[in-house]
Length: 120
Image 1 (spheres, rainbow, N blue to C red):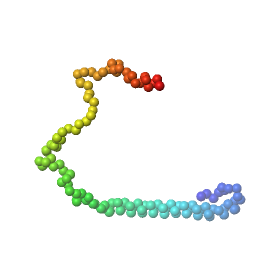
Image 2: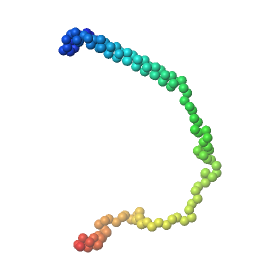
Image 3: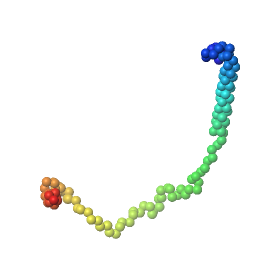
Image 4: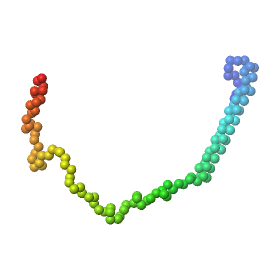
């Protein structure tokens, strides 16, 4: 740091702080140097571990029965599924025949119950 005035104190009193300013500057440089060296050492150790240590290899499939994962080609797999004896009965409305068009809404009579319910 420069040894010049930076405050409003007298020059003699200000000059007495120069020693502390130099010590602060030297300590900061030393801390930065030590931190850089420590970081470089940790980086080199990490790269050495990454490149030097072989990862553990577990073969998780060695105990697996692979025969139940492959496609079977025996006679049982080619037979079709048995058909049910009787189809289940369901109640559904029958659709209009394909040759007859559906009724238009105007062709159907209006509900007579609706006007009676509105008049109440």
